[in-house]
Length: 263
Image 1 (spheres, one colour):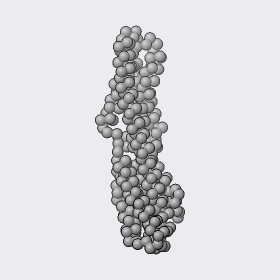
Image 2 (cartoon, rainbow, N blue to C red):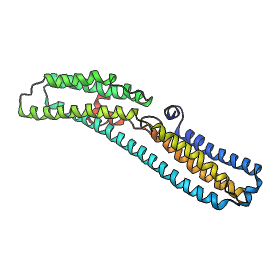
Image 3 (tube, rainbow, N blue to C red):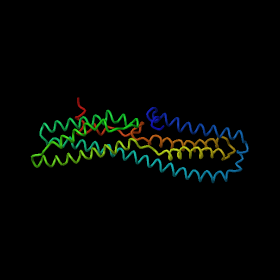
Image 4 (cartoon, rainbow, N blue to C red):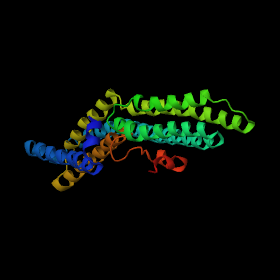
């Protein structure tokens, strides 16, 4: 569900719908309950409701904080993996300068095809939550075949050859990590816990009675808005390659890899 929302709506729209919608529903629910039970305004049960609200709020806050920090760490780790893969690809392009022209040309062709496949084919697929190895496998295999067939002759070529092989191995490793992260999402149990906790916490605020209606509605809307904003963060951070707050493919177009994009 979060993937569909992120790919069809902007973060601003999601903020209006989730945060504003949560606050609006909470205010409406509070008004209806107060109209149905006018005695709530006297605040006879405020002490018990306050203790219950504080206990549930603390537990739910800890759960949401854990989820948000986990998702933010996942996003940061994904950005690191992408940057590392692009860096290794750029280093291979630089190492190729030490090889004979025919070898360098074939390796450049393979790496150029690889970065184009990553950005133009794999990225849209990762954004839709269906990543695959097929788009880049041919180009990566070609790069390995070029290096496997090449026998360095000088000491300089040997040094750069070893570095290129090591970087190519790292590219394959980071590619696997990137595709794995593109499939990850918040476990269903935590999704239910995040939404279910909001469905318990927000209605509890309806039972906290205040004589002035405006003050009570402000209290209810504030709590609901905070809960809604937390849920918004969970939705936006859940998929690192989807939505406005996503991991960019820009590293594959910068530095030594920029020349692969010049037409």
